[in-house]
Image (cartoon, rainbow, N blue to C red):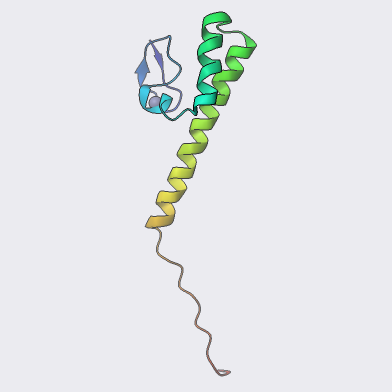
Length: 87
Ligand SMILES: [Zn+2]
């Protein structure tokens, strides 16, 4: 068994990520991971492909998190400008 590098869920050693996170890997990045896993497992090209896939998922999760936070955060109170000088 190995672990999903993102959520630490236990996964079969042949998998890079758990299914939830693998499903977030953009298709163009999935193919090299699978291809190099068959042909050059553990080699620099395989590791690079894995790294890129994981980075992509982390970016997606980060963007989602920001979106959630932006929605949850109270709207900044706009400073009201007085139509006259108040000093
Ligand atoms: Zn995961």
